[in-house]
Amino acid sequence: MNFDTQITARGGEEQLPPAKSADLDVGCRPDNVLGTEAQPAIRQLSAKQIGRRNLPVPPHAKRRRTYTTNQFHTLPQLEWLVADLIPKAGVGIVYGASGSGKSTLCLDLARSVCTGESWAGHAVHQGNVLYCCLEGGPGMRQRAVATERHFGFNFGDRLQWLFGDLSLASEDDINDLAATAIAGNIALIVIDTLSASIRGVLDESSNPHMSRMLQLAYRLAEMTGATVLIVHHAGHRSDHERRASTLRNDVDTSISVSMSSGRGTWKAVKSKDGPTGLSGRFDLLPAFTSSADGEWVRSMFVQHLDMPDASEPAPVAPRNLTENQAAVLAAVKAKLIARNLQETHCAAEDDGLRLDEAIAACIDKVKVRDPKHGSTRVREALDALVRHGYLVHSDGLFNLSQ
Image (cartoon, rainbow, N blue to C red; front, side, top):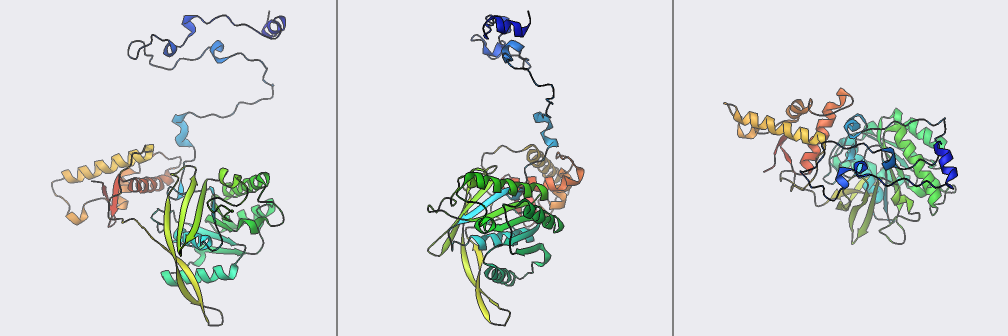
């Protein structure tokens, strides 16, 4: 009698016989004591232990590709645009009440990405930025010029601006934006604001509508490899995004921006793959620039407060290192120890490893899918080890924390 006949004969219920002791996994026995019956390998489950198959698999079904942890290094790794805060090729929300400085803060973030300078004490991966300014264009143009003049540099083609209509509800607009970003080798796309990008098309109170919008935003990130950052307004509760809850639930990062007594605060209220609760304070300082007709116009720029002192070792927090971070830390330690054991010691001001020395010592220790990305993986591991207090980077030299 086959399996189907057994089920029919028993009214749809099959009673399996009690499992024999030999069928039970050793680790489930009450008398199993570690060290006496420990097994060297995980036992394969029998068909009885897996469970009864009640339905046939359709003949057209295909097996999906699966991976083991030993194969994870062949897959894309988590990379940060802004360390521990904003991932590469992700989607994030920056929200705050009107006048909180959220757009100016995003412009300051764009400056850090363009220059590669740290942002609020967080390491930044340098790249080009596309700022989609869908409202308040004249004021943002003044702030961009004021930022250039205050910091004494020119954005050049590293920061590109898009003015006019753009719909995050339109697949055609998303495709056009992707083509624009790829042509400009863009690493960060800022869309300012959400309400302007969906006006008259989607309802920001609707979770299904906002899910559709985010689906297109993630599609944009996947097509371009760029991070998509959407500027939004705060709700009646200033600590929450306005309207749909999916705006926090379905993004990688959500950053709130608030202003109190003339001083601004930003806070990571959600970071899917990083620590939640990172925050910082900033001031919006006045700046003056000239208009097209030569008249002086008042604008503003961001000055971060509470910046960490790079010369002081960061406190070491308990943290599980990634495989690449552990390999780089071990290689740096070995290189420094070998240097100290040499008969001719380096001068005190030369103690430590320069970046090129650290990369040379570690590049063959990291796991990469493509060898040309080896130095990038070493840099990322070094940045992480400095942030978490395992290494100190001062005066251009890497050294062990004391």
